Image (tube, rainbow, N blue to C red; front, side):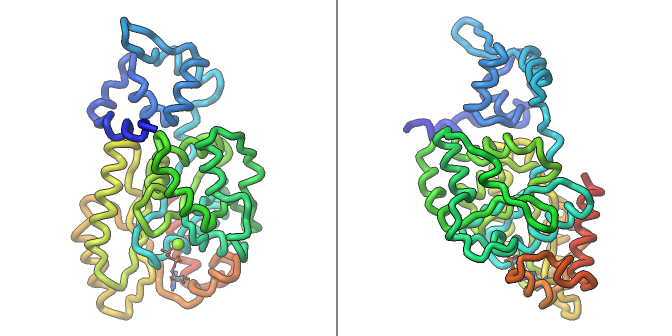
Length: 338
Ligand SMILES: Nc1ncnc2c1ncn2[C@@H]1O[C@H](COP(=O)(O)OP(=O)(O)O)[C@@H](O)[C@H]1O
Ligand SMILES: [Mg+2]
């Protein structure tokens, strides 16, 4: 398929997006602005009878399309917030943060979906599934079915956890899917296409990214409204962060103009040591002007390390502990910011 080239050959700038007050826009502008995948967007424009021909050029009539979207209640995109939890370094508490922030938000009354986007399936294990690799219905199948335009029954894939969140599990099959996406048209937008169908049911969707910046992580960034970056406060993370920030900026420029930084979260902080203080200062100095550093930070504690095998959040495992309190504070800080 030659289609995999187009995504990067039609770069759109934020300047171009400013033009969107125009009544007639191109297909590409429309996809980015309305946040639908190309395939879905074309289908909707057709249904809406919003295609407009000017000589040989095809344009979308925005007024017609907006009216149709309102009528069919498809304009919902700002209601649900999608946050990707990403850092290509492993062991920085991405999974622990996704789990406890997700359950924290549910405890505050939000409808939360947690997506495991790591073939290691650690989040899936944390949510109580002992053998993720035995599962049939995981994110890998969702992506494959979306690519093949097969019907997806949400209830087959979305599971409920006793602490009030829904989740989509992952397992090793996801690495196979990542490889197979290489030749798929608009391969960066597959997850976004699926999530558009479930967004109405949630206030927040959290995506636990894998420790790499490959195509699955790009898919997560392409459908996210923001990225939360956990940073382990025990070594100088400066170099790794630059690569991550570069990738995020590129995705924002080329695929997802709405993408923002939610913030940097310091994890496994041990303020009894001096270097934890030094690293906090270093992160503030280096990135503070660009990215918010959360006031809340997550202290180091063995109690946090124990939760992964239990299938429960820190709120259940050690409700009075400092990590529990820290994730509660983070949850409140994020709710306040949004
Ligand atoms: N606050 C903490 N204190 C001590 N250990 C932690 C803390 N948070 C996470 N851990 C442990 O650190 C390891 C890596 O965390 P994890 O969330 O799996 O990171 P990642 O998803 O970035 O690879 C896990 O064993 C986890 O239990
Ligand atoms: Mg992880």
